[in-house]
Structure formats: structure tokens, C-alpha cells
Length: 277
Image (tube, rainbow, N blue to C red; front, side):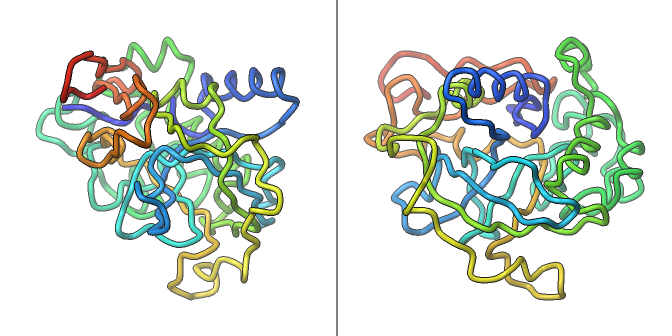
């Protein structure tokens, strides 16, 4: 089996290093991340595209803009919404984080996927304090330990930096627009399109929010909401049938997933016709 990579998670040590390298190169000070931006206005439903988001003040606010790559799709993500991979963001309908018959083979983390441990299946932990209930490391723990990450800290980081509210609220997206994908970010995913716009700010092409995220006031619309997830599953962008080769750069056509340790990449660069390259 193939899995999502844990260093894609918002606030991982490698992601923070990439943010610093990007800032040094461009003077742009942003947070990086990956997730899902579903759109019917794109031939590839947004896969591989990058978006810059300004976020509202729920939970104390997000100090910087987010520059995020969409590597997944989902029928429950559409419109002006981004579903960001954060530590314990909720596994949704396709959990491969925990609860498999053979942890380390068909699931990543030890133990069951229970609400006592993981929180809600949609949204994960509601409070920062609940993060401490999580298993710190995958069943195959060596790579995550070596990377300097652990799931408890990644969960806490998402609360500390405002991408989820103190009681689980979903922050509002104030503006969103497509931008060029930085090499520092696509190095994580190995997915890069050939139709990127030029530059890392969306300017006049930014879409301005029409209202706040309505989920926090009892609504059901996901538009203008920064939602969250972490299902540990290989994303849609890792399946060749979901990708249009003519939109992708050679050698960067699909997402490079990980083994069950969450860090060891599975080489998809086979280099021959019809392979995953």
C-alpha cells in the first residue's frame, strides 16, 4: 500500500524549512501546505495547482498568507473552500491512519481510530489539549523520529498558528487565487503543472470572500471555509487516471506517495511509456 506523506503536514519540520528557503529566495513570507481545492472550472479539478489564501481571525487569526498546493479531490470539497492537511485533521470516509488489521501495513498508526483518541472523523481534535491523546509516531516510527516530527506536536501547531479555532472552528477564507507553485513546495509532492500563472501573488485575480465561513454559525455551506483533514491515504493526485499528462511537466506528472512510515518516498519515476511518471 501507498500512503500520504507526513511531512506534507502543516508545520512539519521540513515544511517550515521550505518556507524559510522560499522566503530567502523571494522575500515572500508565507505558510506552506497541501490539501484539496475542488473546482469544476479546471480540466484537472485543481490537481497540482497552487493557491494563495488570506485567512480570517477565528482562533486568533493566521499571521501569514497560506500558499497551498491541491493534490487531492473529493466530492465533499468544492467551491471556494480549501481542505488543508494538518496534524489530526480528521480522516473522513477513507481512513488509513489507524484501525487497520495490520498496523504498519494497511494503516499508518497503532491502535484503533476512536473518537477518544483521534476526535471527530471529520475535523479531528476540537481543542489543543486533546492532541495529547494521539499516538506520537507511526507503527514504523524511525523516519518520523529522525525528521524531528511527532503527531502530537503537529496537531498542536495547527491550533497555535490559527488554521483551526481553539474549539474546533473553521477559519474563514478572506481571499483566494491561483498562483505559481514554488519549487520549494512541489519538491514535497513531485507534482508540477505546465500552465502555472507567473508569480506568487494573485493580485486582481484573487477571489474575495462573499461571506464568512457559515459552518461556525450552524450553516452547512463549505464555501469560504478553511477546513482540515488527515486521512493518511495516497491522494487522488497519486493515481495516473486522475491526471492529464498534457497539463503536467515531464517527470512531475503525479504525486509521489510514501510508505507506511509517512516519510520514505515510493519512486514513481519508472521512465517508460504508460508508467507513473
